[in-house]
Length: 155
Image 1 (cartoon, helix red, strand yellow):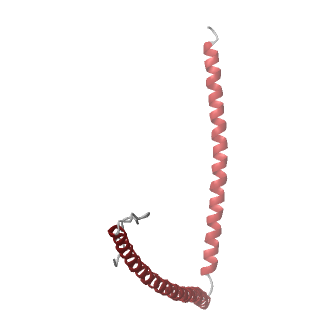
Image 2 (cartoon, helix red, strand yellow):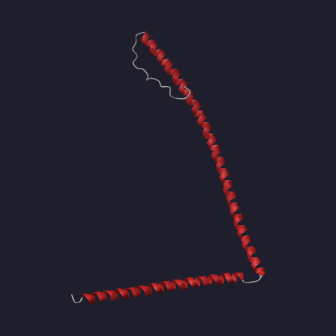
């Protein structure tokens, strides 16, 4: 029990040493980062200073060159957009033609379907007449059709 203050003191001392070591390492890392950042800023400043130094004619030339560079980029972008628009118009034209063809086929199929529907109705009426004739002659038919449901348009 007499050793408890010594143990606590030793733990406290070690904690202090660990804290000091952590501070030194952290400080060194931050110092390196701060130095690197300061060097980067100095390089940027030197570059800007070099670009702005020179005669008035040099600055005008650089400005004109910059403007032409921007104009070239914009011209290229407009050309690219016009090309994309042309391709899109061609695709749209082809799609519209396909759509028209499909609509024509659909109309043709719909007309055939309506004709088939009317033909089925006529056949069902004929079958009912024949069944009525068989029953009038007291003949029991071996087959009778299901009831016809008129659920298709045009009927």
